[in-house]
Length: 494
Image 1 (cartoon, rainbow, N blue to C red):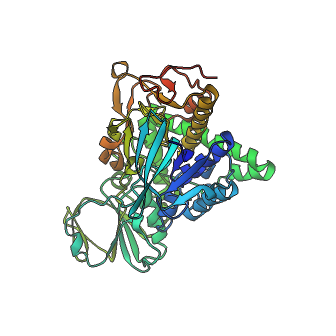
Image 2: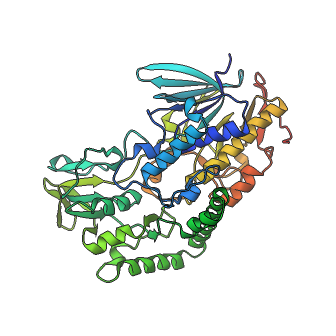
Image 3: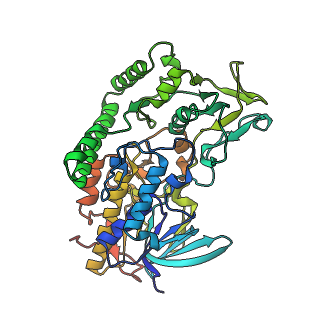
């Protein structure tokens, strides 16, 4: 059996396009293809089209390490991010390697042949592709549907109900009374945008989220770009923001109560008098137990102060024909209800995974350095940071994968696989956040251990050391040749 390609990349979003560029640069003799289940480049940034869609990370860290972000706004909107990803694909020619409408449904590894057999669906038909290395860049959201609780009486509501993930261009929200259910990043993005043309927008939340305002334009980055070459200015802005982000996150962990009070003080300063900060803006948890919500240029606060929008903290009893009845007995009238109630996670795109005839459950996998999994050969998955920009980890993951592929060539081995026995480690849940979408999917997510390298690290500096400069032969990574099914042997990394 022969490989159709050396490396098969799954997903043509931010991660997949980046992976292809890294592969072309660091492993130029390797053949590859990108499988994309949808019909367009961009992943999340092509799927989500709701009003105001934007990043909640700055583009100097969400952007690729090899392609400077040169727009004035560092907090970019969805269309500009989509344009950036597509430009990258075209500039490096990786768009020619994409096979659209190819959905991966299963992958099976054989140590006898040292190949993955990947089952791909194209409509009602399926086909097989064989590859030496399988690189998952499909994110972890379910692209088919978002999460909407089963509210009583939803069918009674006479207006329109829409989940942001299903937003289409023909949805008319002008001059309407709108209720947005939710308090996360999607909700705080929608409120100020819809408030521009709606009759009124109410953000209805069960509990508050930490909200932080920052300028959409990075003043220092824009100044640096005027006096320095774009590449150098980008590196300056990137490291400035990485350093500040790490400092803030570490501060939330070491001094949670002080950080909480600082965040609430800023909200009070933004809103002034007349707002119930304790009820509507004070979460019951510490900062970074869930993701913070970023609002650019205080747009949410401005919408609230203008009276075009308001916040209501309460529980829903049921939907009514005219709107929503709360458990307090109060009713909120609406012409449209937007259920910004979260996303569903779908790890590895929901595909079936088999190694040497044994079917693996994703919830039983053990992460290795946050990118590979115990006993799964020649397989990597991009899983970004929860406390920093996704692409920071994606870039490091790609670099590490390319190092591994080159080492296999240099040493004449066919596969690499992380191994450890249960008695050497203590296993726990992998993601530290208490956010609803992680809590709902905890049984389907891989596990981690209490010791390295069996952890999903949340520290960019530590990952640079481990993934960019760390020894590939760390005592856990083993290497072998095809048909050596009885075992593998360690080799020295060069």
